[in-house]
Length: 360
Image 1 (cartoon, helix red, strand yellow):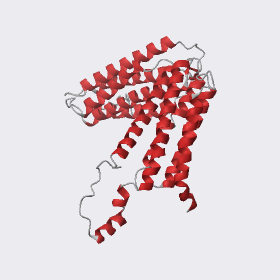
Image 2 (image 1 turned 135 degrees about the horizontal axis):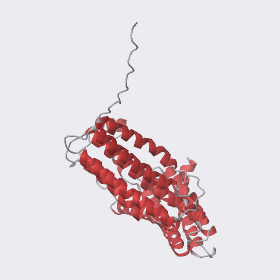
Image 3 (image 1 turned 135 degrees about the vertical axis):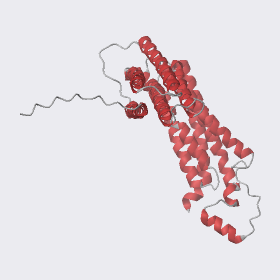
Image 4 (image 1 turned 180 degrees about the horizontal axis):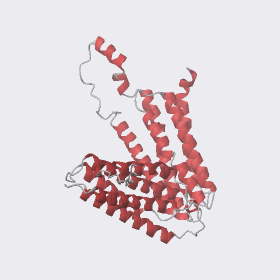
């Protein structure tokens, strides 16, 4: 009678170090979609701001430490053993899970604007760590002089930004409004520079070459290459640019006044109103950009009119929201109607100069 076969003992699978890195990068990237949605976790515990910020700062320091360790051990040979690699990967994963858990513990009632800033900081950290792991997987055992060091610096820089995050929704709102002011200011300066130099493309395109060959011109037109009439403003274009510039200046003035009102009168506990002000103000800079782009030749006057109207709509909505909120304790304050009048004046002039486009 044949004896029974001896039971076989399962041999644990040894995963090579680089394969472990690849899997870790995949796991980290799987966290990103959930972070972008960023729903707060339900809890019965009372929110403690001091505890939250302490935990977030500690978690960021820990992530930076793990990024340093991982970079050091995988930037030299021999590479860590599978068992050592498993421990390093688990530590990185745990550090990342900890900082994401801290972010999820921030309730919505602390302000959507504040949560967005914390979310973006957390996203930068997780994405930066995933990039670092990717680089170490692709180029293991190399001195951290090139892309792996850059990726490490990206994680470290993202972690370093965490203590600088505004600590309440009012401070977060002021941070976002300042950013919007700066963006509109930059767009206005670029527009003014182009107008002053009478060179929309600031010399990027050279039309000094001899293009007397009509066949060459026709070929350029077929290929969509710009010719002289595409590179410069006509007299009608230049006349239309004047109220467009004035409208962008009015946009900058609106944002500045709203920011000042939030700084002087904003209350930390009025989170919903502050969020509404930031949300509509965030739409001003993209609308300014659309208008700025539409004034470059070849200019379509109808497009300029449409983009101007969109910007005016956003500006008026922002002023109305600010007027109805607590940051404007005296709704009859003269700066709001003055700015509305300035915006209307610009738009009316743009309509006058583009009326012919509607009649074609």
